[in-house]
Image 1: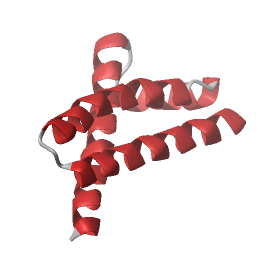
Image 2: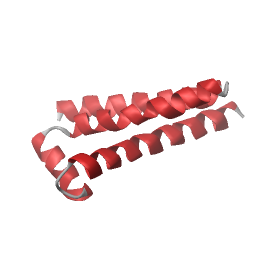
Image 3: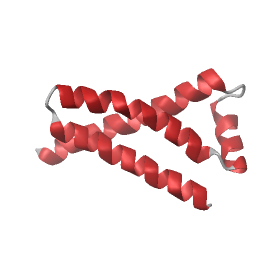
Amino acid sequence: MLRKKIAIGFLVGIFANAAGIFLYITFFSEMDLGPTLKHAVRNGYLGKIIALGALLNFFPFFVFLKKNQIYHARGVVLATVLAAILIAISMVL
């Protein structure tokens, strides 16, 4: 039961991060999604885009805390940690 709650929070966190990336590219990039991501990989700023997308994880995290759904909030934190690991990997490459 606890794993299911954490998994739901993790999926919500991943979705929020992806939505944040999409919204950032939609509003602030002159190119479409695919070309922007390719350009980010080539020029080494993909980690920055992932970090900006991860800012959207604050919203579900605090909503889950407000509703006293601690394990869902832990899942969102795990998704944020995964984003941090991806950022660190993208900086090394």
